[in-house]
Image 1 (tube, one colour):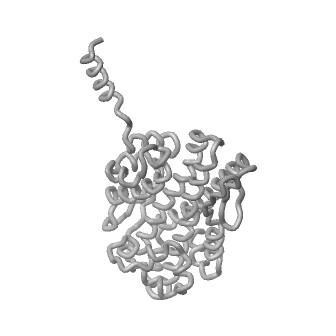
Image 2 (image 1 turned 60 degrees about the vertical axis):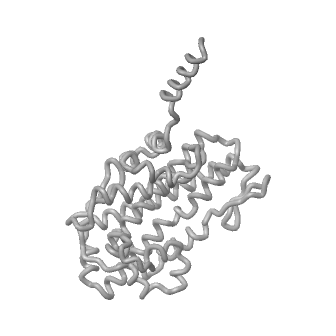
Length: 301
């Protein structure tokens, strides 16, 4: 075979066997492990995915996928629904959506009036979504409806992270602790994100009762809003249980190497550790169980 023929064949092979792009790889992964997000991710802009998925290989950027899903959810929601319509449609997956009746709202920053400074500082996402002076932020511009969208977006992140346990098990097995440490560390704060937003909604409800009675009445009579909150609350409990089971499986398979304690998980062999945020999960749940949040708990009935 001539050199020219060899070059021609090589060029053809490069053309026909082009490496899959990040979006293509992500969609294949999605179809296998979290198929309910396929429609959202298929529509999401590839350049935005490339910007968030850090690294050159799937094993590098797999940890960024929950963030990609989160932002993809926001993009899909903005393209397929509007806060100016009579009904706002929040898509959960391929078979489930909630239609929430549009209501008059007030900016979430007003909740500052009833939340002690100590709690504002303690809650990780409080400054971002409640104590923000950005009037165009969805949680300010559309109040509780914006909180509902953000809560759903964090559900997508948490749900995706839990589902990716099976990917790591299938791909890495139980040979190396490093990917499992990274997995647990990356998903740690997602574990209490929904509970944080339940607190935000509860404070919003309390302030509405005190200062915006008509808004309070509209919230408590909004069937779609209540149904979505109930769903997300129950899913938060379910995902927490799945996470606990998965973590126990990880610890069981690395029983001689990994230990937990002081809010961390440690590798005894190389002394590496990462935060698990168990204390924060406990604190958020304890806060939500306090008497002042009975209004919210009643809304879930």
